[in-house]
Length: 345
Length: 291
Image (cartoon, rainbow over all chains, first blue to last red; front, side, top):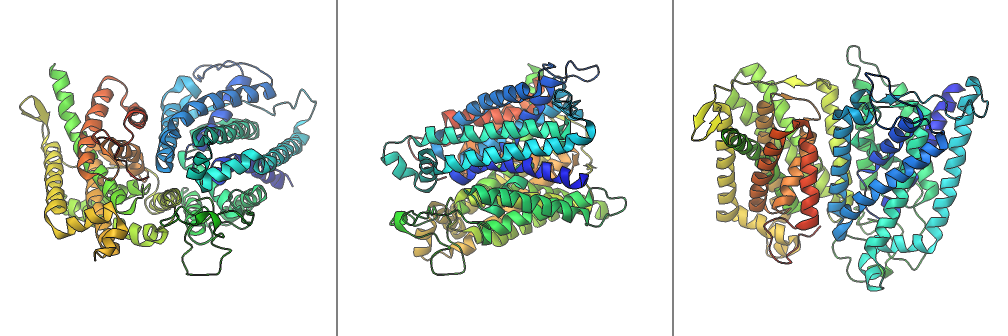
């Protein structure tokens, strides 16, 4: 029972992260390789804002004892400021490859700096000491706390999911998908592609900061081994398996991938004297899952529902003519074995 | 002044290694329009192969050759098994797929060899003075081999029929096919060539650093990308110059601060380039690189 509470809580937090990633990748079409950096920043900041001054030899910045919700809020604001700076550079020129490369660079640098520069977040040993936030304030005992945390995370997941669903159906959501599918058409109608993408990027980063704050409460501590630049791929796997651009699909995908992989990893053979074997195998499987889904079922388990008059957003060669009125590839009669371009690419 | 000259000398070594890795990356991009994020793993595979071969034969030359061969196989396989399967798909999708491949390869290496760093030392020889610079025997060989490979690549691309085909495919794949070029084969051969260069780069980097691990090539990827963007993605000659500039900048910056921030410097350069000259330092006018 306790085991499942833990698993479900973590899955809820991952689902929130994935929903943030989905705004950028699923709705506006760019892949943010630095996304997990914002989650990490949110987690680090939440901890250093709540646990008080560090005792030597531990060192980190700030060291305040703010109430947990306020700390999360500040963490989100700081993440948003940094995301604005990164977004302003990364989205400039509006070219997908450069966006991906810049965000990859940003997260790699963040990772190296956090690890090497100990006065920031205590380097490789990381920060710790966030024990059951809000527990004592609300008078929740240790034994009940994990259920409380699950309820909080599930509640926030629900709120974020409803928000995303509404965002997706709003004018802004339509604009985002238009940017994703036919950037030139959006520009021709006088909308700023750059501003639209930047807004979506900030929504995503804000959700990442929030989920980082929750993750901090769940883990109690945070250090570089809790996140690597490649971590974003696990999230991407969830988004991809469920169905990009689709809120329900993304949540389903995260639960399938996350719970599926946790259970799978538990039954993996342990190799004596080789403790890295099982985690590495798990990473291999996640990598394969991503490649295979991208190749064979890029629309995911629950495809995004498209209105009948919408284009398929094929960005492959030869999309120029008539792309606005084509049906999505997987809905069209099977022309050939290779899926040639899929909505949202 | 003497110190500065020494650092410029080390800058040549860094630039030489970087140029090998970056020119391979840019060749991959040129023919397939893909930023291959599994590029670092080709270097890593080269390093492991060299390590294994050298441990069993104690022959450095054989180690270098087998690293190049292993890299070639890895590059060729990456193209056939992954990149070609995503032909016609959006660049971002292929990019993510290549990142997935990078994760798979890195962790397969962890499963086989463990995550620990392996020491890799070959006899460096005592440093000798060459004009104002000081190089060890091994460092001199690194620079020489990079120059030789650059010249060979230049001749191959400019003087041979294959080179002409590569340039045609890089310019426009469909047009190249319409002119009777077997684009698929040319692309596959280019990946083989890029893999050979990258595998050799992995060997050179490993023996120069003196250690490597499964994530070693991936750690070099951002610097490689910076050099490539500096020279212009998909432009082999520009990339060589970009590698020289970035390698020199990194070495000089690293010499006066903590060298573990090299990655941060690389990123700073990358951001600056994207803001000021997104098409590369040497690209004039409005000619853009399709992204």
